[in-house]
Length: 440
Ligand SMILES: Cc1cc2nc3c(=O)[nH]c(=O)nc-3n(C[C@H](O)[C@H](O)[C@H](O)COP(=O)(O)OP(=O)(O)OC[C@H]3O[C@@H](n4cnc5c(N)ncnc54)[C@H](O)[C@@H]3O)c2cc1C
Image (cartoon, rainbow, N blue to C red; front, side, top):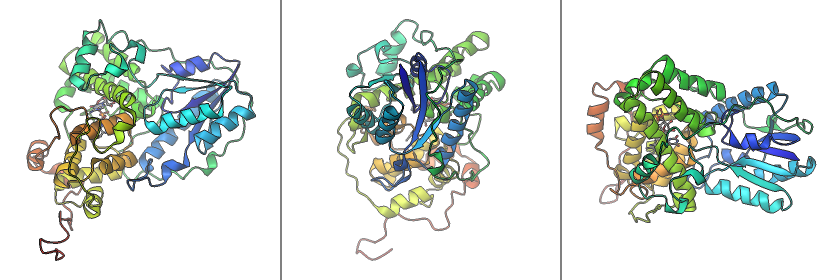
């Protein structure tokens, strides 16, 4: 059997159930598709892929290519739409089977369906590689996934030994040969911009595994994670594993297993538990996206809660540009634009500002995050935005952060705001006209 393996958000050789299945073939063609649509503005004025994630992704692909070459394989990088590229390769190389990872997101599901429709005689299989659990090993049916995270967590933790059962799959050390090495058109992909800021992430499986080792076994930062995770801009405050987890250079099960190993060899405390707890949040949103499909992207959310929102272009522009009346928000938004990353606390603060102070449709904020974040993950991003906007998995309704209180608590001496130049020289107010319709 000749197999085409379509790499997507699983850019690794360790713990990769889909690649393991593909490796049981006579011939294997390894493919990654870069979609030109990622680089064009979408309905909310933002692109799917901004410069930070694109650079990180390209680095990840180059690392993967090196690993594949060491096993006598190659990575075929095609610039085109998957619905065209994959069927064409199948025909050109007499492929009998296409394998990829199961992906959340309606676009991703639509693409897979379109490919299957074009290839009625080809076996098309998906495997779960993004999550801790497989659908079958979840302690409930997907249709019965609870409406809130805490109900989900309790069910998972009640299931016997849920943490140690998540066995990883061994790192692949051999792959079948490729049916030739066709020339690809990777040269047509957009250019990679130089990083704008020295603080950055390096893409690739080896860098992801290194960061995991560093946070746990070298710096032991995990020991105090529960106290530091809310810091606004402290590189060791949280694991910063999200970019590698998001594109699958790092497996969530590898992280879970490494936490368990750390606990047995060093310390087991509230902090080590809390890192696992955060992985469970990621897990919850993954299944939430799979369960709710297109409802994840609706203004009224999964809960179908109507909120009175409008679109004020000047407010959205000021939020993106870091020129609102709120220095803390501006600082975080400047950091996001410069580096592609902000802490979880900063994400909550700027999201609350967009929804509550600026009274904008949360989907504009989610779309800007999608473009900017180096760790963008469709399920975590849209799940968290819905949660903050009060239309998703939060029974308490919209979260409204008091921005002054947040600044006093998390940036008491104003260092974060100074570092990221949060005091805008021309802050944009909420209104462009006064009550009598005169320009302000
Ligand atoms: C509005 C908003 C949008 C977000 N968008 C994304 C996104 O696109 N991609 C993304 O990976 N995370 C997203 N998050 C969740 C969270 O902010 C990041 O995962 C976290 O800040 C990444 O930094 P870290 O790796 O140091 O996290 P740590 O605190 O070290 O946590 C470890 C891992 O747990 C997972 N995790 C932690 N918190 C959450 C959470 N609230 N939801 C889901 N998973 C979580 C991540 O995989 C993270 O890498 C968003 C949060 C908010 C409030």
